[in-house]
Image 1 (cartoon, rainbow, N blue to C red):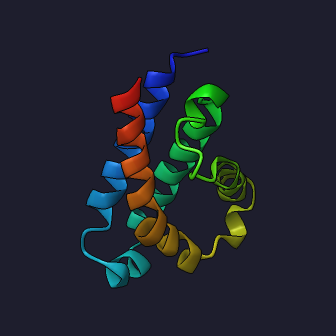
Image 2 (cartoon, helix red, strand yellow):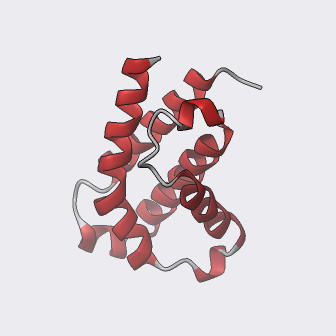
Length: 110
């Protein structure tokens, strides 16, 4: 098992990449298959990394719904033919900023 910090770094890096990939906005995201692929791949990596964080580290930020993040990874990895881009975009816009803040806070506390 890797150190929890490695997983935090993976999560933080994925969030940063997604931010870069989506800087041109929703219209570009929906029109560009490469951007969609890049965002979805980074979401998969991010979600997988959250599943590998220890429960003790997750407990530092109990307001984050860690289980739902893991469940989302399963959808992205196993139901890839049914991925709803509206849901992906919603996650990017409405949930990643809060997760980024939580990850940064965990870095400060450990």
